[in-house]
Length: 125
Image (tube, rainbow, N blue to C red):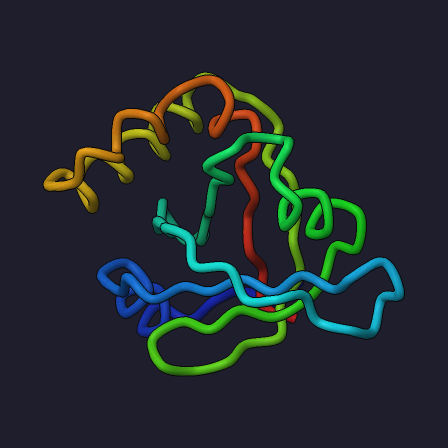
């Protein structure tokens, strides 16, 4: 399994320009880029869907398991993996959101059950 480089993760940790484009159901056409928040925890890149599991990009990411992201001014082919709810990991991801987006009024809603249940790990393809 491929991993993000340390340098790339360091850049991702401070970047605020992630746009996600999972494949549509045909498995070939990229979805419309959706801007979302991202966080790095350990050696992993995570995102959450604001509207929880009702989010259309979330459904595409989970169903297709692949697509691309735009981050740090670059395009990356990626895979998507749903994050199974685990208390310790959820807390670590919550803390990363709090730290990175502490000045935003929108951070608290991202720490609620809906977005937590729609956490996705982004993997390099």
